[in-house]
Length: 90
Image 1 (tube, one colour):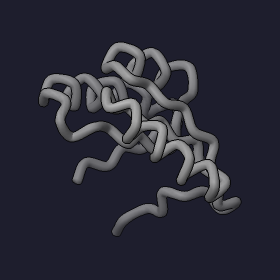
Image 2: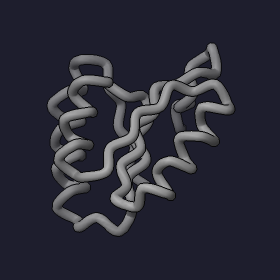
Image 3: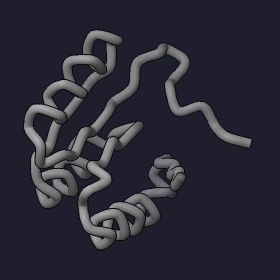
Image 4: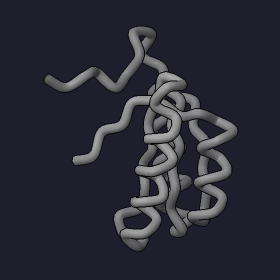
């Protein structure tokens, strides 16, 4: 059974990580129009740093990043599970 990602208020903290500035900024605009709080990072390093600072509910990660970036995120989320961060890998 899948847990709902969006909070009851309908507003989520979203972190978009994409080295394509146009794609990342377009995602930001669309998500903000829906009322979400959005942080954008343009590099993998910025994404990991922003994740620590922002504590997002949802992370949109560029699929073009190497598998090692995804594994770093998986490890980072695993260490934070006790802090109330859920993870979903699909």
